[in-house]
Image (cartoon, rainbow, N blue to C red; front, side, top):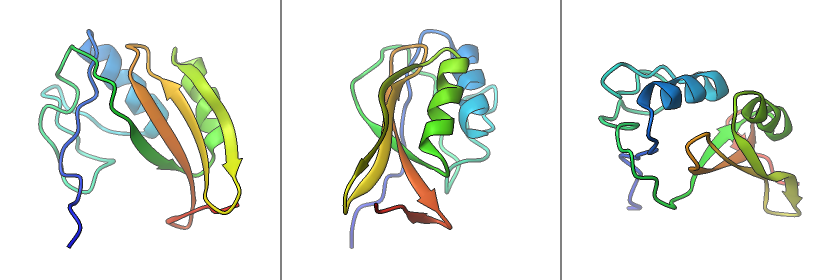
Length: 116
Protein backbone atom coordinates (compact mmCIF):
# COMPACT_ATOMS: atom_id res chain seq x y z
CA UNK A 1 0.00 0.00 0.00
CA UNK A 2 1.34 3.44 -0.86
CA UNK A 3 1.40 6.15 1.78
CA UNK A 4 -1.16 8.94 1.12
CA UNK A 5 -0.60 12.63 1.84
CA UNK A 6 -2.68 13.28 4.95
CA UNK A 7 -1.62 16.80 5.95
CA UNK A 8 0.13 19.82 4.53
CA UNK A 9 1.17 23.31 5.63
CA UNK A 10 1.44 26.42 3.50
CA UNK A 11 3.24 28.95 5.67
CA UNK A 12 3.03 32.73 5.54
CA UNK A 13 3.25 35.70 7.90
CA UNK A 14 -0.39 36.79 7.36
CA UNK A 15 -3.02 34.07 7.78
CA UNK A 16 -5.89 36.14 6.35
CA UNK A 17 -3.87 37.08 3.25
CA UNK A 18 -2.88 33.43 2.67
CA UNK A 19 -6.50 32.30 3.10
CA UNK A 20 -7.76 34.95 0.66
CA UNK A 21 -5.06 34.14 -1.92
CA UNK A 22 -5.74 30.38 -2.00
CA UNK A 23 -9.50 30.89 -1.92
CA UNK A 24 -9.20 33.14 -4.99
CA UNK A 25 -6.82 30.85 -6.90
CA UNK A 26 -8.28 27.40 -6.19
CA UNK A 27 -11.71 28.09 -4.70
CA UNK A 28 -10.66 26.50 -1.40
CA UNK A 29 -12.84 27.36 1.57
CA UNK A 30 -10.70 27.83 4.67
CA UNK A 31 -12.14 28.59 8.09
CA UNK A 32 -10.83 31.11 10.61
CA UNK A 33 -9.14 28.19 12.39
CA UNK A 34 -7.13 27.23 9.28
CA UNK A 35 -9.22 24.14 8.60
CA UNK A 36 -10.03 23.44 4.94
CA UNK A 37 -13.70 22.76 4.26
CA UNK A 38 -13.32 22.24 0.50
CA UNK A 39 -10.49 21.42 -1.88
CA UNK A 40 -9.05 18.46 -0.01
CA UNK A 41 -10.14 14.85 0.37
CA UNK A 42 -10.50 15.18 4.15
CA UNK A 43 -10.41 18.38 6.23
CA UNK A 44 -7.00 19.14 7.71
CA UNK A 45 -6.06 21.19 10.74
CA UNK A 46 -3.65 24.13 10.82
CA UNK A 47 -3.09 24.08 7.07
CA UNK A 48 -2.18 27.78 6.86
CA UNK A 49 -1.24 28.65 10.43
CA UNK A 50 2.58 28.35 10.29
CA UNK A 51 4.54 31.53 9.68
CA UNK A 52 7.93 30.08 8.67
CA UNK A 53 7.93 29.25 4.95
CA UNK A 54 9.74 25.99 4.24
CA UNK A 55 10.81 24.91 0.77
CA UNK A 56 8.42 22.03 0.15
CA UNK A 57 6.51 21.62 -3.10
CA UNK A 58 2.83 20.81 -3.35
CA UNK A 59 1.30 20.25 -6.79
CA UNK A 60 -2.37 21.09 -7.30
CA UNK A 61 -4.43 19.70 -10.18
CA UNK A 62 -6.15 22.40 -12.28
CA UNK A 63 -8.00 22.41 -15.60
CA UNK A 64 -5.89 25.14 -17.20
CA UNK A 65 -2.34 25.80 -15.97
CA UNK A 66 -1.89 28.99 -18.05
CA UNK A 67 -5.15 30.54 -16.83
CA UNK A 68 -4.37 29.64 -13.22
CA UNK A 69 -0.90 31.21 -13.46
CA UNK A 70 -2.49 34.40 -14.81
CA UNK A 71 -4.82 34.44 -11.80
CA UNK A 72 -1.85 33.85 -9.49
CA UNK A 73 -0.20 37.03 -10.83
CA UNK A 74 -3.45 39.01 -10.58
CA UNK A 75 -3.72 38.03 -6.91
CA UNK A 76 -0.14 38.97 -6.01
CA UNK A 77 1.76 35.74 -6.61
CA UNK A 78 4.84 35.31 -8.82
CA UNK A 79 5.15 32.86 -11.71
CA UNK A 80 8.41 30.88 -11.61
CA UNK A 81 7.68 28.60 -14.57
CA UNK A 82 5.08 29.33 -17.25
CA UNK A 83 2.95 26.45 -18.52
CA UNK A 84 5.32 23.78 -19.78
CA UNK A 85 4.65 20.50 -21.53
CA UNK A 86 7.07 17.68 -20.79
CA UNK A 87 6.33 15.25 -23.65
CA UNK A 88 5.01 11.91 -22.49
CA UNK A 89 4.95 13.01 -18.85
CA UNK A 90 3.18 16.13 -17.59
CA UNK A 91 1.86 19.64 -18.19
CA UNK A 92 2.89 21.87 -15.30
CA UNK A 93 3.59 25.36 -14.04
CA UNK A 94 5.28 26.72 -10.91
CA UNK A 95 4.61 29.80 -8.80
CA UNK A 96 5.21 31.45 -5.44
CA UNK A 97 2.38 32.74 -3.32
CA UNK A 98 2.63 36.28 -1.85
CA UNK A 99 4.47 34.86 1.20
CA UNK A 100 7.10 33.17 -0.99
CA UNK A 101 5.92 29.54 -0.80
CA UNK A 102 6.63 27.43 -3.89
CA UNK A 103 3.61 25.68 -5.41
CA UNK A 104 3.16 23.58 -8.52
CA UNK A 105 0.24 23.14 -10.89
CA UNK A 106 -0.56 20.02 -12.91
CA UNK A 107 -3.02 20.19 -15.78
CA UNK A 108 -5.95 17.78 -15.34
CA UNK A 109 -8.88 16.85 -17.59
CA UNK A 110 -11.82 14.76 -16.39
CA UNK A 111 -9.93 13.89 -13.21
CA UNK A 112 -6.88 12.58 -15.05
CA UNK A 113 -3.46 14.13 -15.52
CA UNK A 114 -2.93 15.52 -19.02
CA UNK A 115 -0.02 13.78 -20.76
CA UNK A 116 1.22 15.66 -23.84
